Image (cartoon, rainbow, N blue to C red; front, side):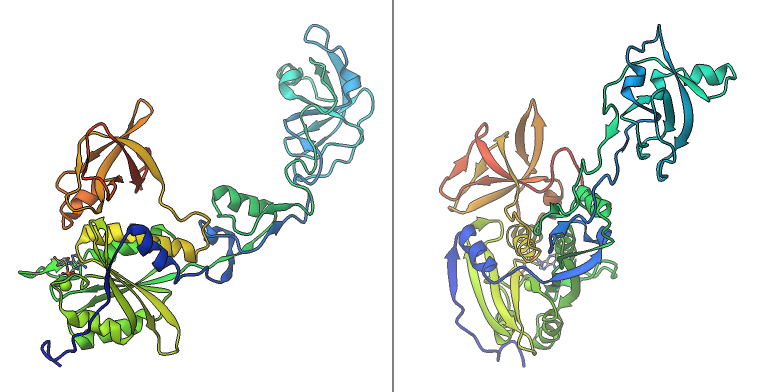
Length: 433
Ligand code: AMP
Ligand code: MG
């Protein structure tokens, strides 16, 4: 089949706000099923079960300091000027169980985390004893001088202080950060049930594309979209499945699409604007139902979204990003990211924003929502945004310089220098990753 014989279809093309497009897209996604995996591998994923403790944490009353376990009444009135001398009857380290019972006038040497011996009701830290002086003068440690009176319970961490046996510690739906991973470890979980990560198939289209690493060819460009999008997929918690490049012909498109159907979402780039070979759109339409939208945003106005049917009948959503590298990334940040977060069961899908003071104007010539590439800095406690220069959607380095997208709303022709604008953060001024 040649380019001239393919069927022209009438595609339903409509103008949508960003919110309408996002709502339609998200309605095709649901939270994925749970998987069980080692706790460290679950970083960033969402808990699919309640975590209930089978133990008290800490399990026993234990010492918060290296020192001596005593009865507070034994050292009443002790001070540096008139120390109280106690007989040392034993010692206990973390991980041991104490053998000795503390009685009036006696003490047990104890290390941080060691269980408090029976009879003791307080710990005196080493620095409030004459231990060092005794050691330095060659005396043995069968006795110890206490330089401080202590109250009952001093430096004792009670059992169950952090967590009680039977307590619901982390609820289903919690996102696992380093602290939650630590809590799971403290509860004795080796593995945990979490919502699995979505597999995101990523496909570039175009006869002009080379893979990075290929030999450079005149008139060709390197495929950057697959890599920026795959990196975004990784960052937001998906598993990228790189399908490479489909050429602008039926055979190539069909072969790649079949691979793309073995995923939770297929993301393509290019081939959705007006000047493109319609063939690409027609091939997609043969595999399911696909709509072409004009979204009231700049960059990234043309967008395709549809549902493809796999050979086994499974429905696979397809997000068709624009080809220009900045448009592809901005559209991925608005729509692809949200779909991934929804499948992961994340509690919050909206991109984080700050209010920033514009250092220069943003023009909005045709009533779309402008996402201007911006460098956001914090000065005197306030966020400021300046633009990264020429806003052409082909200028990928201008995206690399940005850490935010400063927004001019669709109903305003312009935002002026000094105006406060909502700014979506790509990264935070304080961090680079
Ligand atoms: P198209 O939508 O196919 O007209 O592509 C729009 C623009 O994006 C063209 O200049 C393409 O060369 C460029 N483009 C398309 N795909 C990619 C890609 N994967 N990486 C970099 N640029 C691309
Ligand atoms: Mg193209």
